[in-house]
Amino acid sequence: MKTVRLMQIGKPLQDSELPLPEIGPAEVLVRVAACGICHSDAHYRAGISAMDSLPVTLGHEVAGRVETIGEEVRHVSRGDRVYVHYLVSCGHCDFCLRGHDQFCARGQMIGKHRDGGYAEFIKVTGRNVFVLPDEIPFEQGRSHDVFFGYCASCLQQSAP
Image 1 (tube, rainbow, N blue to C red):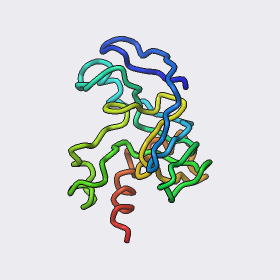
Image 2: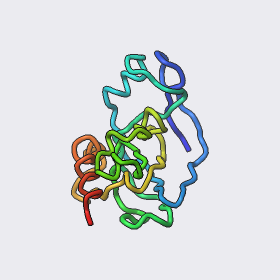
Image 3: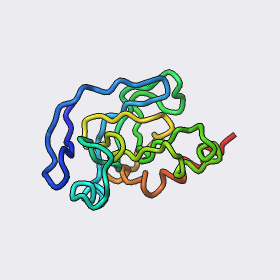
Image 4: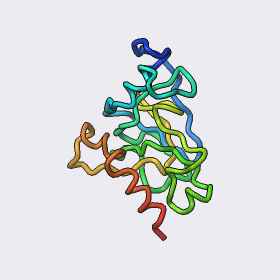
């Protein structure tokens, strides 16, 4: 798949080819339709915010269509329009179980700790995708992770 990656701090992003990610039973592969450019992406590139390892595919404001779902994912189907929550948490620690996944010690920010949406596809846990209504264009829906993703995640985790 085609990607645009940060290979070196302070240098231009580079076009790259990576294998299509394989998903596990609780994961979703999303075909990216829109990905925003956030100030954090610029900070990572400039070295203002520390990066754990390079290269990495930037971009945490992502919307697209579900391409493939793992057998444990039930709330979305292939072809669904979705937006992606930017923080991939473990789902099992005390914080995650109490709906405070932003404090997960194993949490990974998409586009910083793991590959993000400056690519044709992105792989995330099923917990990280939320259905995007048809009335909302992908270009607007990609920012739902920032504005509504955390709230939706909390509501989903607190549902019986």
